[in-house]
Image (cartoon, rainbow, N blue to C red; front, side, top):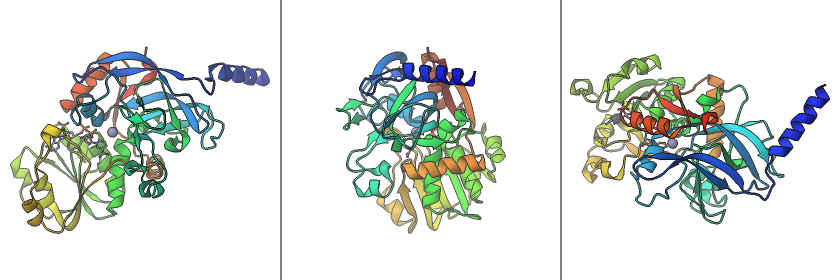
Length: 377
Ligand code: NDP
Ligand code: ZN
């Protein structure tokens, strides 16, 4: 009986496997234009190459970067229509002949980029996110390694990716909560590690959303004292529940008094216009202020040379996600320590995604929307 079941399983796998040189039929939720309208579209992905894996998407989550992209906040030449999504968790359903990292049935994740040159100093140092020789982002990016095709992201039923750009996910991990780790998780984890945040440090997280709430959880797990800054009263209890020692509502000037020179490390995840110099002043002499939030071009904060000169000797730097090696480290750490995002699951319909985008902009998500890709029709 067992043999018969195995035979049937092999036959099913063989029949769904896509021939090595054939394009992979795919379906996803495509952004049509900058108004934020979505439609279900069918398209082809490039064939599964010798070093590629084909992942059946289980969950894809909504990052504020998707919203910036779709609304043309950062560039005027977004290649509509395209499928966003760079927080992807799913099951491996096919592997190329050279692949040893994954086998069919394993779980895998994909984050913000899917290829890089492999030769530049950044790639050699496991920081492919800063590749200077040809980095390919997961969506809306020209794939120079595949005839300049425009990449299509994770709000879709599948994705083809080179094995070394996929992250291994243990079978016992809650997949719907793993998806946001692939961007929100690593983007908050990486600067905390870069700045060597340690037990007893005073850490501030500015912007308590998808990235920010992960920043709170990681900083707390490193033993830091965490203060959260946001613009609403609605999230005060959540911050304290997640282990923050203090919550500051930036719209309440009384709460901001006496905070200059307070923090060893500040992480700003703010996606809107804000007073960046306030956080520079709150960073201690010699402390670090890391910026990951990227407001729209029309909402950029203003910092003058004088602001730097008169808040001297603070290290102000920006950071982008993390390399593949560090992303794997973050994922393994999160699973081991049981650190996951707070998520709300939605269906894979244009209406649900449009509604979710609006709610993120209105500050109504706690804390990450995750699309259940099995519900895509
Ligand atoms: P969210 O919308 O989930 O979270 C942003 C949070 O910032 C919300 O809680 C929001 O408030 C809060 N906020 C808005 N204005 C202020 C303000 N003036 N002061 C304090 N808090 C404020 O977004 P994400 O966490 O998904 O993304 C955040 C930013 O990070 C985006 O710009 C995104 O593009 C960027 N990003 C950058 C990456 C990188 O590699 N550098 C990677 C991923 C994202 P509320 O909702 O309560 O109104
Ligand atoms: Zn993101």
